[in-house]
Length: 194
Image (cartoon, rainbow, N blue to C red; front, side):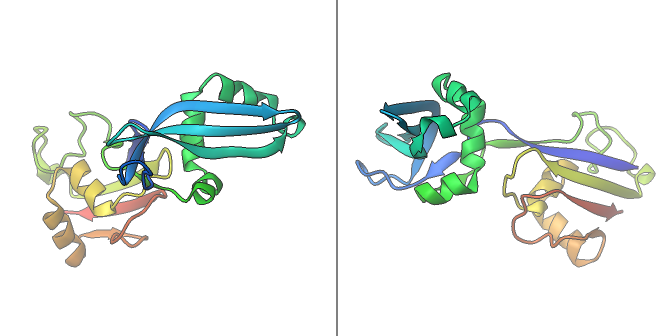
C-alpha cells in the first residue's frame, strides 16, 4: 500500500542577506509591503526585519513599472499586505535573484505523515506489529519547494535515526529512483523493505 507524506511550510523562511546596520546574516519577512507611485510608474517592496537589530530592509518586487501593466489583483494584494503573496514572492526565483537573497527553511516546515497513530511508524511506537509491515512504499510531496535532505525526512517519518536510514540505503533495503544524498525540493517516492 502506498503511503502519502506531505512537507508543508509552517511559517515564512528566514531571508539570508547581510544587514547594513549590524552585519547580521538573516532577516525575517514581516509580510508587509511598501508601494510607491510616481506619476504613472510604480515601485513595490517586501519589507524584511533584521533578526539581530530589527533594522528594516526592502526587497524589490516591482521597479519602475507602468501602473497599467500591473494586474489589479496584484495591486490589491500588495495594498492589503497579503501574507500569501509574501510567501509566493519569496519562492519566486526572479525576486530572489534580483535581490541577491537565499532562504533558510530550518524550523519553517513540518512533515505530515497522516497522524500520530498512522501505521507508517516503523519503530513500533504506535503499537503496530512490525512483522505485518514487510514493505513500505511512500510518496513524498512538497507543498512548496523546500530544500530538505531525504534522509532526514525518512528518519523523521519512520521514527528511525539518520544513521539507521543511511545503513538501510547502503545495504539496499531503502531504494528510490532519486538520489537520496544531498537535498531535494521536488516530489519523490521510496520503498523500504524490512
